[in-house]
Length: 97
Image (tube, rainbow, N blue to C red):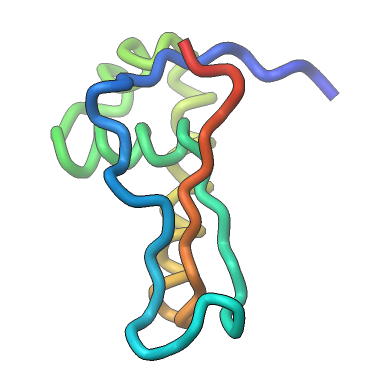
């Protein structure tokens, strides 16, 4: 397996919380879905800031294809957590720049 490329992640716009879950259900009873920091950043750039995938890939200093893969993975995790009522955990990457 190839090593992960370092991704440029804006530290100023990190998530304010590390866990999102359905109300009224203890986190210990929920299936946990982990969202990596680069996945969070990809969603923030495209869905919140409305950058194109090419612009966002340049911002994160990865190829457009790598960015598309990160975005696809993050959207699947977020959607699965919302639809199935899983806890969504935001994790930090060691590769952060």
